Length: 297
Image 1 (cartoon, one colour):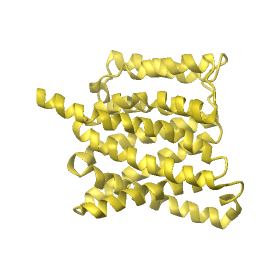
Image 2 (cartoon, rainbow, N blue to C red; image 1 turned 90 degrees about the vertical axis):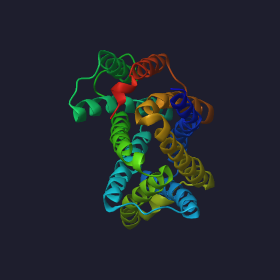
Image 3 (cartoon, one colour; image 1 turned 60 degrees about the vertical axis):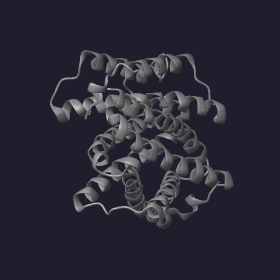
């Protein structure tokens, strides 16, 4: 038992750092979107992340994944970062970074639903209560007239959270048999490959969209904060889930919305009104009702 506890404690600090980086990432994306298109921003982000990870990987050396593993890694890269962060980036064009950070925290809700579907089992009473609380919190983010008619930006961020939940379940089957660095490098490499056709299409249809209104700060934040930070966060996450399991890691990472809101307030000057505060409290409370068994893929 003591060996298990020590093993889990070693994964706690990397997850805490990853949570901070993911929280700041939302703010960095929102800032960079003031000058860059979503496609350009995501391409820069993935290029910087992939470059960092592949330099480390080539320096350390690695065993080439099998054909089956490559297929899973490509699928992982498709759902996250490409689809997941692409949807969140689109959503950030319509809503504040603080609200996006809170909505992004609903990933655990989707994990519970997917686990129940895949494993053909009913969620526990605590999980049902958690889903209800989180859903109520999402609705309250819209204010006193909140209803199911969520804005386009909110729906896009929720779609990104769903894609991330799918990727989390895929990662649980990939990472256990592979070096976390290999998984992360290939994951971002495939994500970048999936983004390049969209960038070429944008160049062909509206090349001006790549440079209009952009300044050095947008490029720097996109490459360093979003790209480098995201790559390091995923590396730390994939390293930790080999010690904590995907389920326990998912529970710990529920504090990401807290860091995301704090970063939006500090760096972007955004504010959180009473309804958003209550909604945030419900979302976080609901997520923390999930046990490791509820999130077990």
